[in-house]
Amino acid sequence: MESKIWSLYNDGVKKAYKQKTGNVSEINLMLTAMLKYAGIEANPVLLSTRQNGIAMFPNRTAFNYVVAGIEVQDNVLLLDATSKNAIINLLPLRAVNWNGRIVRERGSSNVIDLLNVPTSKDNIIVLGEIKENGKVEGKLRRQLTDYNAFIQRDNYAALSEDSYIERMENTYKGLNIEEYKADNMKDLYKPVVETYSFSHDNSIEVIGDKMYVSPLLFFTEDENPYKLDNRKYPVDFNFPYKDTYSISIKIPDGYEVEFLPAPISLAMENNEAAFKYIISSANNNIQLSVSFDINTFYIPADGYQALKGFYKMLVEKEKEKVILKKKA
Image 1: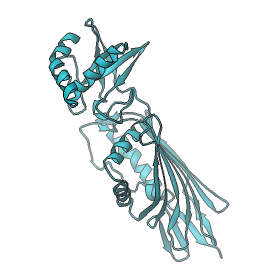
Image 2 (image 1 turned 30 degrees about the horizontal axis):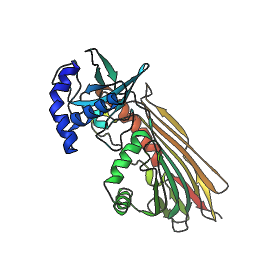
Image 3 (image 1 turned 90 degrees about the vertical axis):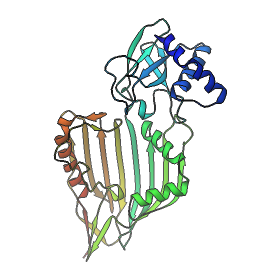
Image 4 (image 1 turned 90 degrees about the horizontal axis):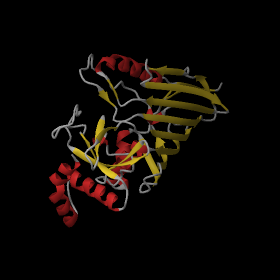
């Protein structure tokens, strides 16, 4: 079967090599040939993109995409040369769709699980301080791994730094960013790390002698994204991920904590999603630890109501305020 694939694209591959440009098949078949030339046992892996749908059985129209596969012991390493930010076993998201099929030189083939990807992490640490006027000032460090880093690199490459900062400030109303720095943007095997100083004037409401504080600051989820009464199609998360927030906020002199939200731990029935919220106060500081996990690629339509209910409780918790009161 492989000989037919190679003959189908043979002229295109040669043309792409000479012109230094080509389509997905030409580029990745060229990569496969180069690996073979280097003495590495590589073969094409056929797959169907997300947009093309799921290939139920092998045929010429079911598959519309090709990547390179290297068989190592009981594993297959997947490579795609069409994206500058793709690394081994981290294909562009368009190609992460159910199963593929590796096709070998002598005609044998095997199914390849394309959904065996690492959980992508987004770890955020914030050190902030509440001012007398209700504004929060502080420093933030954000670390992104795997597909979160992949997407960040794609987004960052498409914009100037000023445009990127402006977009973040427009996304989070009341946010002002200074001293922005991004590390490891070109070192693809390291997490992307963002650091910046910030001020935010939309997290705290001052009423009389009290302050009502949103402890998640501008990361507060204040609206349930799932509003439909029913859903006919699965909810696609693109990839499994884990978001964590570690936030420390110094309260102003002359104030004390009057109310803290209760901690909570939520999980869907089969642990497709989980949420944990822990908050405390000590030494004039509010300490918040939040984790949010999506442990699946998608939730089927019959699980939509459970997901909607899960998010409802998550949003209700995140909207709860810490209440500070002026000391007598």
